[in-house]
Image (cartoon, rainbow, N blue to C red; front, top):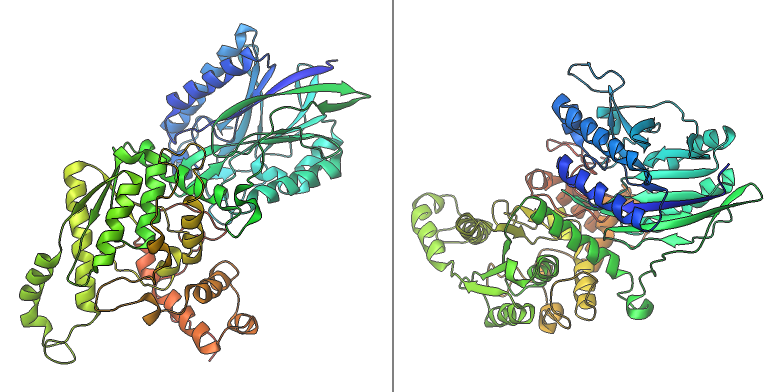
Length: 574
């Protein structure tokens, strides 16, 4: 019976579908762990393919490639070095033909001595929020422990830890250490939730737990890593850093029949600004940075291009892009109209200088004139009065800017970065095919009030792994001046919307809590305003359905999290 075991936590960043690239990452992690004396390397859920696979896992050729790569990795363990636990798809019947719904298992493979020793498959399949596991995977049976070099490991896959059934089954059947491989996306405040769930499983079973999470961006999801170990007394001897790859070896000893992990690598929690009003911004900003970086790099764009208007949304978007990609890969364009103030021109130029990025200027006035001449014979007959202007002309401005950015993108190959925030997109305060144009939107799930907090925070802190300059990157006037779309003279956002602190409070209740009108009113908001915001939210669904993807940071982002019909006649109580 073994009394010592060194287990490496391999927190790596896989790329969806790059099976050979992911295999190389796993091999590198194993080599690093072997050099540190590890007996076992534990990687994350579906790490050989990337996660979530969505319907890609229904392709037999994809499964063939994934299973072949795991076979190659298994052969590597014949060298006498550490074994591995890695996530990947498995087929109980490899000869099964499409449709494969429910025929594929989400499994943890145990590799040692040159072969696949055994596997354990995910029992509890999540089917909420962004997860559709029940759509493509079948559920595995309740697992028993795996005997690994004389130690009985209770291997679980992600959601299996979120409820007590699987861990209790493993404890009752003799497991000594719980090992959980995960693909758990980042959300604000979710790290603490994971730890508390792990504490629950440890308290119920009396067993220590190893929690290994994926890191990296995958479309709209960001996986933050932050892997950890809890001992049987709920102490945390190991806590890996968030948002970066890491391989850390945990040193285990058996004493009085129980396993205990020695103190090892521990990442300090975020303490930026010492608990001030912008405390806690670091993980949010780093999630946005990593989501954009991986989307651009994994899709092989040379860089991004965005409109830099002199407003706070485009300034923060540019700052995140600079930190994610470096100034040389960010191209900005100021596209003034006759309504653009000199203040905005100056602020955009100062922001570009502070960030060290290229700024071009393309006036959209010729396009406005051309569209006016082209459409006036028809549109004048529909206007309230001859030559009057309304949102039609405002939207032409926004769409002229979108067209300009897409033309430059076509020539340079740079991806257009959209800059709308969650507050505006929620209520339709955005122009379809105009300012909503883009390949990705880093602020898609960021409320306007959070935009301000992140901007102030970034001016004081250079985040870890950021490629941008230290110090102020967003001019103070951009943060303090009243937001404006500048599509007509003296326009301010609050001409059409309530103050953003009021709007965001109502929107969070409607979107994240699905709160009723009465409860929101009871929270101190005007009933007519709440009803108005709710209807604006519902009416803008058709716009959001056509919006580009963007980083998810809240519990309920627009997209897979929140699926509402576009055609919807429900207007609430009569």
